[in-house]
Amino acid sequence: MIECQVAVLENRHLGDGFFLLDVAAPEIVGETHPGQFVMLSTGPGYDPLLKRPFGILDAQGDTLSLLYEVVGRGTRQLSEVVPGRVLDLVGPLGNGFPELSDKRILMVAGGRGFAPLFLSARLMAQNNEVIFRYGARSQAQLKLADWLDEIGLQTVELFTEDGSVGQKGRVDDGLTDLIKKQSVEVTLSCGPDAMLKTLARLLSGVDGLHYGSFEALMGCGIGICHSCALAMKDGTYRKVCSDGPVFPLGAVAWPD
Amino acid sequence: MAGLEVDLGFIQLKNPVMTASGTFGYGEEFAPFMNLDDVGAIIMKGVYMTPRQGNPPPRIYETAAGLLNSIGLAGPGAEGLKPVLKRVAGLTSTPLVVNVCGRDDDEYFRVAEVFDDCPEVSFLELNISCPNVRNNGRCPAQDGDHTARLVSRICKGVKKGVMVKLSPNVADVAEIAYIAQESGASSISLVNTFLGMAVDLERRVPTFKNMVAGLSGPAIKPLALRLVWEVCRRVKIPVVGIGGIMSGKDVLEFIMVGASAIQTGTVNMVEPGASSRIVREIKEEMVHYGITSIQELKGSMTHE
Image 1 (cartoon, rainbow over the protein chains, first blue to last red):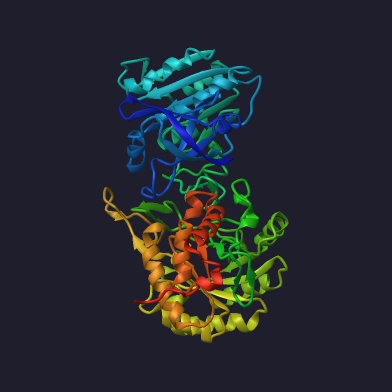
Image 2 (image 1 turned 120 degrees about the vertical axis):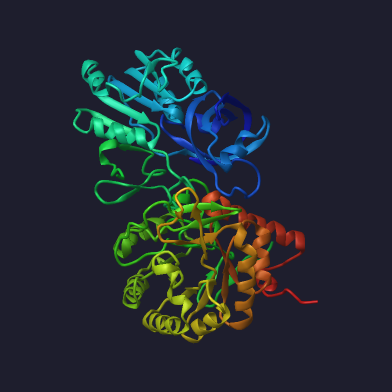
């Protein structure tokens, strides 16, 4: 966990507001665990003031790869950053997913939730069996799925709501049957809150360890500002940045 | 070698940079990013007697070069803070300061008593100005009588120095500062956040469940500087300037209008090594402007 300046190597539009950002960050790459994130400035100066949190898509050699979607002022500014520009980065942050070996793992990713699960899948596939489900809204997002073919996963299942690629439907379709049939012991998920909420409901009675990685509005990323509070079933708030971003799905209190 | 030392009367600091309550956690969170010995003092996140969960999300909203927050002073309570203080005192020789909060005067007093007896604590900051825990952003610092009553009770009851943190959300902050001084305050710190608001256009509701929230960050620096200047003209006790400080230059401005020291706030969240950088920049700026000591610089602004 350090603060450093990183040079942008590539900032490529994949389509539909999804961008792939590569930065040179050798100090971060070696320290990264699957499921961690970084806080990254989106440009020079103090407006926007805050860094933005991004899940780590990959970390190899000197290159840290991030996936982001343009959703507001900060990400829009970031989308205009050209290679060679320097950004401020704090990371790697958060606890990431638990270390696993010799497990049958089901990963469920939705939209930009692909990022932390791709790195997890690539590393965990070395000593686990990984089934990867990815649900996407657009062709651009599905381009990412091509990468999954190269990292030795047991099964990759793609879902689109219109059925244009992969199966027509949602990542949670037939999920519990799949878990039973494949003797899945661990599920790791990342995606929109609505997806995580559905998974939490579906998995509540299902044996095994079920973790979700959460997205939140973050100010600092290091546990100081308490802005990313997530309500838990025990009545407490936990900080998505420093207590998470990964939590057992069953521990989270979901709003109605 | 530039003279960075600051004498607040009740304490000497190695430099004028303190870290503002609520923006620097309990200090230890910043150890990976900077040397905690670099700063003049570390002010802990505000503490009540009992643990608090804080306000329901959303708790922050970014504004132009600023930040609205409605955190609601989440924290472990007085007993929970004690072991943290022991731990942090083991990490650094920098003076540690407890930011004392209360739902009512009795709670303020009990919290102050607990940490008055705590050897790890150098002095107390009395937070009578948090806008996020009472209805409509009201706080004791908005009422002269309440300020007098509360400050004198605390200052009579404790042995340690008491720095009283004031709200900018008043008609005449210098008057409140004067009242705090006459009630026994050792020092004044200001400003806490400016009351602000944001609206969720889609849902036609206030962004924050508390309606109002506190604005901080570089956007408020000119506002804070003006208020610090006014207070410095009115009181004799040391004044500690807070509000949007991002650089060594900003610090020199606050000192020049009369502040004895400053607190870094929101910048710590944006850039965890910022307070250390700012101390470094102060030294560089002092060389650049031919300033020999902070003491000499204090209140040296002249009017042409």
